[in-house]
Length: 110
Picture 1 (tube, rainbow, N blue to C red):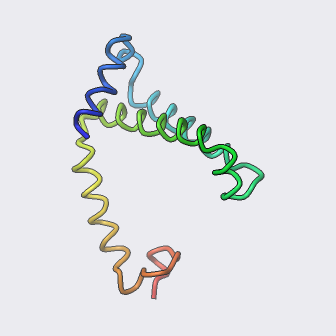
Picture 2: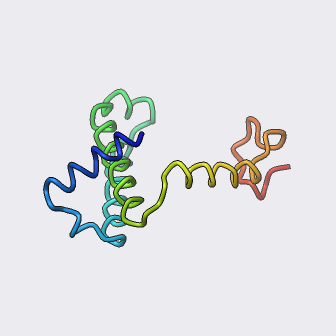
């Protein structure tokens, strides 16, 4: 994963784009790319959307992940660390014995 992160940053740096990549603009770009991903599913079912737009879905997801990497870099965040921290929080909110096979939000689990 570290090699991939470095490759993304190298791509950015080779084009001198870091100066445009502040937290606000990266967050905006991340949201825009996520919306472009979502657009693939507009007005059709999930299965049909994936079949019809699979290549574009891959491209848009890649854009979301690239901007996520750049956003984390801008804020000096360690992706592995913050993901593991969030998983630990989710583990507490969604214990297996309550959350298994349920799509309920944590505050509605029984």
